[in-house]
Length: 141
Image (cartoon, rainbow, N blue to C red):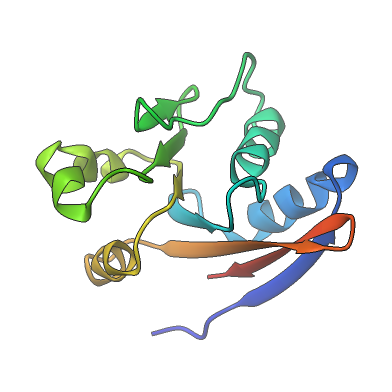
């Protein structure tokens, strides 16, 4: 297994493109990105910034009740807050990860992350935490 790459970026809403630039540099074309942070940490905000950088037009919102949003080809956003891993699998959402592109997963469990890594997927983690008036984004790949 390759060494883990860890980068930390501190950014405000106005400089979120720095985080997107690092993700673009670090992630392969097909990856699953677990977004971790407290409520209102900025998980969906980061997904919005990535969508904007990829040329997605239109509103980008949290898929809290729909579980998944697809933004054009190659950008997927999941919210598993109210969903157990078994339910996720039974609903057939696991197969969605085979679609090429970036898959952003909010509230994914450690067990799901380990399963996906074991299945051969490239899985990254972005931990989001307050840092004064900004946020710190810890990227692990």
